[in-house]
Amino acid sequence: MSWEQALLIAVLAGTGTYLVMHRTLTRIILGLGLLGNAINLLILTSGDGPGVAPIIGQDGDFTDPVPQALVLTAIVIGFGVTSFLLAMAYRAWTISGSDEVEDDITDRRLARSEATPDDQPADPEDPA
Amino acid sequence: MSALLPLLIVVPLVGAALSLLAINSRAIQRSISVTCAAATTAISVTLLIGVDRNGTEVASIGDWPAEIAINLVADRFAALMLTISSTMLLAVLLYALGQRTDDERSRWYHPAYMVLIAGVSGAFLAGDLFNLFVWFEVLLIASYVLLTLEGNDGQIRSGTTYVVLNVIESFVLVTGVALIFAATGTLNMAVLPERLAALPDGVRLGLNLLLLIAFGLKAAVFPLFSWLPDSYPAAPSPVSAVFAGLLTKVGVYAIVRTQTLLFPETNRELLLVIAGLTMVIGVLGAIAQSDMKRILSFHIISQIGYMIMGVALGGVAAISATIFYMLHHIPVKTSLFLVEGIVERETGSSTLGRVSGLARRSGPLAVLFLIPAFSLAGLPPFSGFLGKTAVVTEGLDQRSWWIVGAAIAVSLMTLVSMLKIWSGAFWGAPDPELADAGHPGILRKHPMMAAVTTAVVALTLMIALFAGPLYRFCERAAIDVTDAASYPSAVLP
Image (cartoon, rainbow over the protein chains, first blue to last red):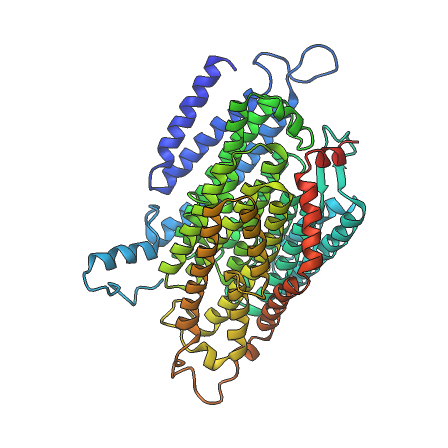
């Protein structure tokens, strides 16, 4: 692996991780896209070094074709998952007008009931 | 015989394709699904019998030499898991047909369910790490669709957590796979043990940890479990039944496989601590909840601890205990969720306090709940007692006193939280509005759901009844799994 490749993977993975830690789904999706590409590049570098010809014919040096095949599969899977996530973000936006991921409902109710002193659930009719 | 292996994946995938073609007719979709699920179950059973008689079956796709081909491998362990999981998938499908809810009416339910079957079969059969990843993805994507089928607010919210966490889990897994390929030049699980053994200890530990984190998240072990009680309860009952019974167990299967085959000198102390914490935290979470589905979801986590405990103890006896535990846990957990589904269908809620007096209204339903509940807690004479005894005995033999103490304490606490469901939902006076005279029995109102649930509960009783031969089978499977030479010599000519 050349240092340029390592740097590129590091920048993609770092930016991706930063974005994934946000609460808005669109940012998470962008972050996951970057992270996924960082890992795709990592798979690619797990073959030989850069600059060798792809596998054509029988003679001479060629790069290991296996990581390329793996990357292709990983890209297709990433594409499918990303489109599913985008559909979900769109759905979240049509329902609530925002794509912010909320806390678990029971957790929120628990937090509220702890805030109210008399051990009663703050709102028993809150639909679960 | 080995021609059966690809069929386990091809049949449900063809079913999914046909189901998509018949997208406008629910009747055709139903018959396709039932046919394919039944065929998968029949093939699995045939395979199980064949594998037990003739040893491990291998199918190298495209007839390439086994070192470089995509291999499908069915040893006794894989065949057993395939049989129990395809049986459960068929049972839950029939239950969903009987439930006639909106999810099942959705045109996407049946194709997604077929893809889920293919993914589960593929994950059990995969003979190399990359295909393991691919089949994991297949079953995950099907599970994303099933989890968010209604597309309502709650499902989208918990679906987001589930999808994002699982995508990250996949990234960790692919990173592990890429680095293993970089270090060894192969991903074939038959070639890997030898190549991995030649690596420096530190590299091997790093690779092992990457795989453990990925599969641990899938299996919901401590501290990677928080997504599970958040997302499973949001799914409709038949979907959460199949998720609860199967999906985490696919993760456990992958952990058993990698820890015994690829990293046999694994860090047992670390795994033991993880197992203990998974049990304890899971059951404490269950006690704190007041919703049936959430209690049962936390139980999944605590039960996973027992399976990991077997893996951590290592050796033939402990691995056979783990395999038996998985065999018992899958139908028991599924049946609990199926009972919960009937309760929810009948009363419109699974929150304790809003449901009460079910035992007075339907004695048989109460029995259907009590049998798997006692089994899960580990009371004799049910299957859970035998599974727990096997794991605990092995812990005693290996003098791991504290984990044995934890295991016994957790099983008592499991009973406590089951009694919470019992006293909340089944005991007490029935809701006066619903307890009118002339009200038909709950089970009679939902004959299909009742029949399937009864069949699954009966299966758990059969596991207890035929524990002797089943346990001997698990021991034979464990001998295959723990013997380092058996897998490579079966795959490579």
